[in-house]
Length: 237
Length: 181
Image (cartoon, rainbow over all chains, first blue to last red):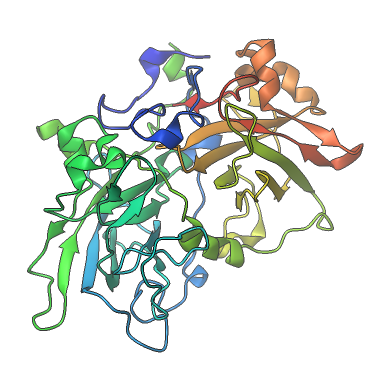
């Protein structure tokens, strides 16, 4: 059943290892046995598809989900979801969550001594359009401390969850901001060995989409894995 | 560097706060209960190397199930977080056999994606059901050693035909089989 030569594995260095000791939580939670390679079957070639009725109108405007405006630097985050051949992924469900401008999550286990913003939940979702495009209006998240090691601070980031075509395209990742000096110190960012692949998680300042006297914009494209479309039998010749 | 145009984005952990962003889908998931014909409930726990519960994991179950329901929400998909004891419980449509090729079918199973703080990438497993005769001829199951195969099989719970128990062990004794494609 397992035939490594027929499996389309990730380009070396572009995905993190499960066991990555600088990220302390990975030590007791990552498998030690090798993953078992399988061919793609109908189970993997298919995946969930979500309809527009699933969303509410302001789900991709995180600044408009409460009675008042959230504190912080208002930004647009936008980009395209693409497959490995550069084709747009249409109708992809994109879910995001983030800390507020002071670096605090609206979550009971976050005990960081920074203020909760009553006008900011930090969650959003959208479906990509016919060009694979998505956008979110939000505030720039703050950095925050965490317990991984002494004086550990996360660089500013927005969590992204994406569904593409086929369940194997499923991806949860984090988008970072350009020029953040905490990135080189962050074990989560650095879990991706290849420097170019790492930089792919960093958005770019996009002055073309910024609105004068209103908000800055950041652009970030995401490439998802596609399916191989290779019938099972052919993979075993 | 041209090859990099097509590399897939690197995975990053869901971290401890994913419920902020991922709970909405749970709230909008159409209610599925054991009163609905053709449903089963899978319960279990997610455990770490030390047998300690993983209270901040999330599982996603997938099978290419057919249903009339799917215009807004896909019938074969369910997301479920673990609770403070690492427990999860999910009601799904009982999966049927899945074609493999012209000649063979796969035993009924669901794909299970495992996300948690500590997992930089999600893990993917499959859950099968011990009372399915088709298991004996399933090429995936039979390709795995008997000892490890057991980690992929859910067993009837409390003697009820629609209740199954299945644990996910991330590391160590009884480590669940995880797959790659």
